[in-house]
Image 1 (cartoon, rainbow, N blue to C red):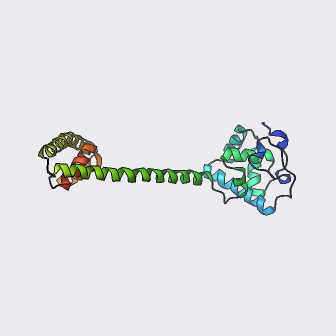
Image 2: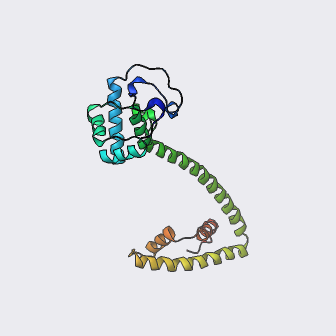
Image 3: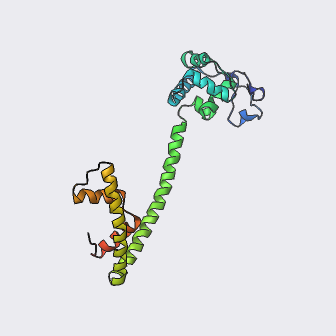
Length: 220
């Protein structure tokens, strides 16, 4: 078993320490024993985390051993069910096995991994939305510029329409083949049009549509 300085196998109730301190730094002074409420909270948190992971007692014990803390499955069960005292080795082992901060085992109000994960996803989504908003505004400005010119430039209109029809012919063929293969109902023109634009329309088709519709030259 891996040990962490003189922390190994010492009762947690004798010490107060932070995440940084258990990594080999000097330990602070002894503090008062943990309260019964804290013991119950820790047992409940361990049980909840184990259930969230879908682990049995045996699987959690294996995970604990893999991070340097050997414990029998029955020891975990006793901790959860009857408030068995947790040693410092076990305390650190649970933290590493569940990949949560030490403090999260004591205070269930701290964000759990799933909360943190989705919070990061939310922040990433906000950044994507900023990019999307900027891209959308830029796209609309460019389309309006092309519309103004296409409204008075027949050559430009014809080139846009010709390019659109070339892409449309290829994508219509693909859409009909896949609709038949996947047994999609495209028996009416409206149904096929919806299926085509939802699944096979290219960027060239969308830009042509947006330009030509804006100047009343959309052929469909």
